[in-house]
Length: 117
Length: 110
Image 1 (cartoon, chains in turn purple, brown):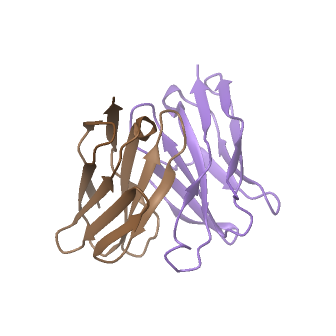
Image 2: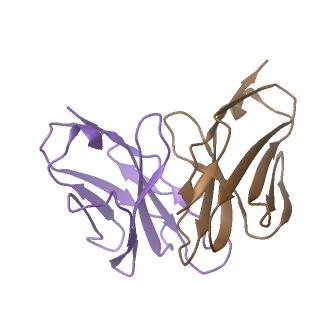
């Protein structure tokens, strides 16, 4: 069964450093997303991406964050100058986006644990 | 904005049935998702309701009442592996991006 894959599974970084999280969405999907989940808290939407541009973003997704689709398969989240409060699980997700019920279903990757020290 | 409310924690016995409720307040409701999340893992899709009524999928069923802003997830023949968080998420307005509730932690004991 197709799945969203993410790397790295866990990354430890020093405060102030830049981090890039990598994702390979499901191959025929058109919409891509980043969510995060701080330990013990709810899953929070960061950004969605369609047709090589950001389609929606939340208040969390400020200038510290950026996304890119550098080639036909990868989708990355860059966090500049990381802060302690950026420590969280970051989930990549994708959906087919066909406008149907199944097309709107979002499938999540296994996540990348980011620890900022 | 959206307001999604679920119980924080529930316990049930192996082999039993449990119903996890979710209420929401939103304008321009589109649909409601249920996801299962084991600790430290990704949310796994369970169901997506857009119309009123009950949808059954194996041991899991999901119900929606749009007029009441209410949904429930019904789990039958509970197994120990069903111990997990169950996340209710709603899409609304012009967006099909789900907003998640805090989740319900279900503990299944022998």
